[in-house]
Image (cartoon, rainbow, N blue to C red; front, top):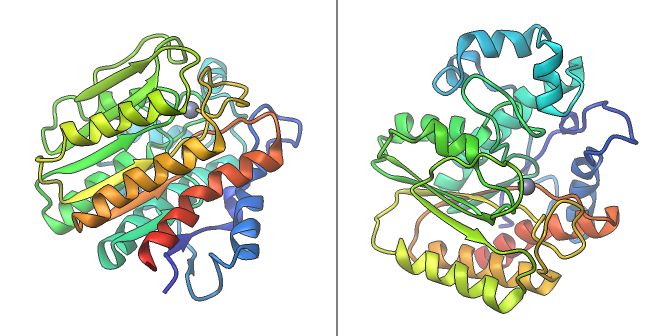
Length: 301
Ligand SMILES: [Zn+2]
């Protein structure tokens, strides 16, 4: 069976086609996955909106209310980077529900992916940098409760630090946060993850893959019950916001290395998109699809 893929048409919010954030990538990604025969009616799952009670385990009630009723103030909207319109509200609830659903499917099938998610700059009480709700944090708390997991790993390889995730779990030993990110990139104020690896500008494939191998080795005896993998492709050399020199082949190597590592150990893994702002829209969508493609190959071989 193909890898379970969670997708919803409402992942594409109406923020204007000329917005800096390439929102249409979510709609194109599922098309490409269908064209590549990775996604079809049998393995696409449509999520519903995350419930307020599930969200409340991570986010403050006052903040949830502001999103739900579209009442962020000007400064809060500026920090978010999106206009807070109805479709953004809808997208935030449904994409978070999507990561929760993908994580449950991963428990059953060993691997599953969302076609959105990885909103790692969202804090408990505040959205930042295109992130409204911290979907991975919400899903991690949900799984921990539902399956009484002792230790969950959040492995964040987006080029930006998973600052919201690090902050949310700074005093929670049951959720282990790892972030490998560009040192001189957003956010300027970094938080403290369990492991932070800061990369210098301009590093290329060999060095990058070595760093990831080293990190995986460092955490190999931790006995994780579950892994969330934030597979940001803004490490690519043509990315508008990344500062690294990673090739498409480098990203392919990375996904194989990470996903195989946990699959061999029989630890379920839920993959989420993370960031990507490539100069080429077509390239961007293709880069994102490597996550789903690699999961599918590993599951079927
Ligand atoms: Zn990013």
